[in-house]
Image (cartoon, rainbow, N blue to C red; front, side, top):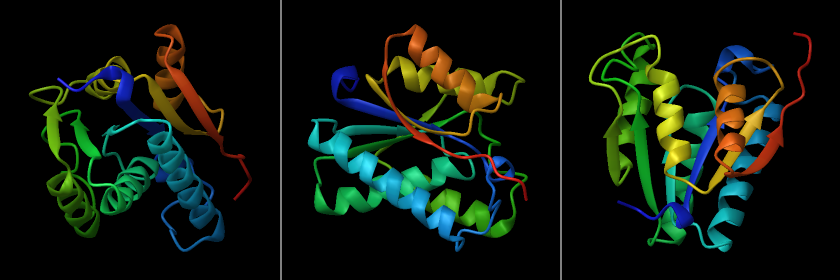
Length: 171
């Protein structure tokens, strides 16, 4: 088992809760990706070497890609795909499924948190990541949902949080 003291996990919103939705060319998305990459780089500089990612669409994918890029500069990094259930990406569009498979394959470890989908497997995945990390990086817009749940759980477990606030804007 990797040390919790050198492990960092991530939480963030799916595209439906982001002002740009699926348009990753939007300047706000590009800015968030830079902020995520900067936060991952700062975590590395602080001694974090193991990164856990929940592999959901949106911010999780941005985080995984940022850490994989960081790993090219720092091969001592390990990345763990914390997968909530085997069918996580089954209903995604084909290009999203291909991106997911490519990223999971590039990770050093793959942890399947639930053997099948349940209404609670996403929360179980989030708890797994927080329970195995001492730092949580969060891209959060203040709305209810999985990201808020994960942040509240991290607070209850006394896990440090680096908040990358997102401003909720009208579309």
